[in-house]
Amino acid sequence: MQTVFDLKLKKMKNSILKSSVLFAFLVSFSFAMNAQETRTDTVKTDSTVKESDDWKISIGKTKIIIQKDDDSDTLDLTELAERKRRKKQRTNHFAGIDLGINGLLTPNQSVDLQKEAQFLELNYRKSVELSINFWEKYLPIANEKFGITTGAGLKYNSYDLVKDVVIVNQNDITNWDEDSTRSISKNRFKTNSLYVPVMLETNLGKDADHSFHLAVGGTVGYTYGNRTKQKYKQEGDEFKNKDRNDFNVNDFQFAAIARVGYGDFTLYATYNLTPLFDKNKGPEVYPFTIGLSLMSF
Image (cartoon, rainbow, N blue to C red; front, side):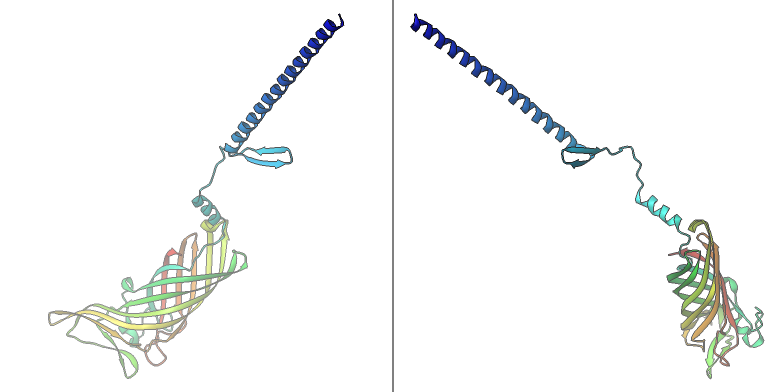
């Protein structure tokens, strides 16, 4: 009997052991599957976050996700530049290209020239000035509302003569000669100069496009390349003649200048404080110019 009971007890123990092993295996397998699913979900979640354009910040185990607004408006570079420009009180009012009408005045500020200067009587429609002002510098005193403007430019002045005369330099004096055999269709006296202005400038307005600007001051110029240019007929033949000479033109010219305008529109005027020709070497006449700015740099 003892032997049979032992055998049954032994079988019962073996059965319990097998059941325990099987249960442990099932529990372990269940945990493994759950962990695998968790890792899979995590990978999928991370992959989803990675593909997103959202910004992620990790602090320890805490993740902060900042979502970007896909509907936010964006400004192109042109609009940003335009907004920045409009905030300014001023833009360049000197640097650019100017076009004006030239004239000559007597010492008494009359356009009716004295007798010795009448050979310089002008056709004002064709007496023009072209200025290329290639550099400008603004020195603020009260931000952009008030300051000093300077720069540099080139002037090309043309004086269209009404009378059929030839400007000559005789005995170191600028005078005129007349050739009755010439039928002159174009008769011009030209000067070139490099000049520098110094002006006090004020700008009044909410921005550069809606600002009244005024600048007054003086200029100093150095003349070079003086010449006459004629186109004429003589004995039925056409001729073109250029005479390059200094014609006793003052090397240094000092002038008063004023520039006034609104926004990009600018008018200007200059008046020479020094005569066109050296003292006692030509008629005493003073150039002036009235014009407008065609474009700004």
